[in-house]
Amino acid sequence: MRPRSLVGLAFVLVPALLSVPPAASLAQTDTARTDSTRSGYRRPALAGPSSPGGTLAKDDEPKQSFGRLPIRLLAPYYEAKRKIHEQSGLSFGFNYQAVFLTATAGITDSSQRSSAGGVFSIPIQWALVGRGTGWEGKFTIQLDYRHVYGNYVTTPQNLAFETGSTLPTAVKFGKMDFRVLVMHWGQALFNGKAGVVVGQIAPDDYFNHYRFIHPFFNFYGYGSSITSASNWPNPGFGIGGGVKLTDQWHIKGMLGEAGGFRIGDGAFLHFGDNFFKGHFFKAVEVGWVKSWDERFVDRVALTVMHTDAYEESPDDNWAVGLATNWTFGRWVPFFLAGVGNGKGENTVSKTTATVGLAHTFRSHDVMAGSVNFTHPPGGLRDQYTVETFYPFYLSERLAFTPDIQLVFNPSLNPAKDVMAYFGFRARLHM
Image (cartoon, rainbow, N blue to C red; front, side, top):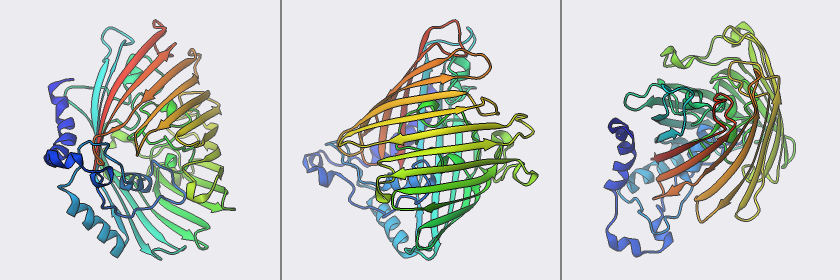
């Protein structure tokens, strides 16, 4: 790792190290080692685990420390967050994640084979109408800053295209000026049986998600996160909604911006250029969950998507995606699949399938592995990717996650039969 790359990791590590307790406290019970202050943030009703609300709820869950280093110094801060949430309905957080990724080969001798970068995020939700009722209205905004370290040119996300994989290697670890990522109003209706959302929306926050979709907690690779057969747009203006048909069945739909904001435009807030020109991303999803309270635990969802052609993407895209996961004690098998016409700016496959298995240990430690098959467009050869990760919670607020991706028949590097990516991610949330 380059010396300047250590700056981001220091940003993650220093707040935790400053709050290391005396050695005597390490002999306390598991319950005592956890930060007992919770803010009371709840899972979102229609959005998935990678949404701002999903991130806030995940970060607020208690995590046992296993005799590791609990964080005590910031307890008054978390107590203040709880009181603010109880009194005003305001939920907020700060998180920073840093990743280093290296590949065993490049497409050419001059290809960049390593990259490192970080993402700083501020998710905020504010229940301003009908708080605590089935008619709650909530304002959501997330601010992001994404950057690379040192003199790296290629981002960790795009290292795949320098080295040979057709699938992005570290999802969301790109390069982006500080800006509004999402900003929308969500309104619950009919005592919580339905809801609508209007504003700047990230479609993957609501559709085709499963338990391990969030790339800051789980798998790095795109093939283990979501169907790559869809031309997923960046966040942009959209209108969506959903209905709970029963406690198990639900349906969701969206009419959104076809392309979303442009990553390099430097704008602080931009809703995209296509929605009001009549170029849309459309999605309809039918889902079944074991129960609404366990909607992230046992679920299956079928999503049909279509993206109109627009200036930067002259062909329209259609795709169908399936996402499911089930929980059997500590074992969580999951399956993702997608098929489409292989067209569109952000489409990297015509057919894709991922099967995986996770084993949860105490608290939030989990070891998971997946096998992905990708049939890319353009006559490229089929690619197979095996990925495994293990997030280790040093404390409730600080996690380290090593990750290995083995790529067989890399589609963009026909000179190689097999190559590997080795990654290390650190994440701090407050």
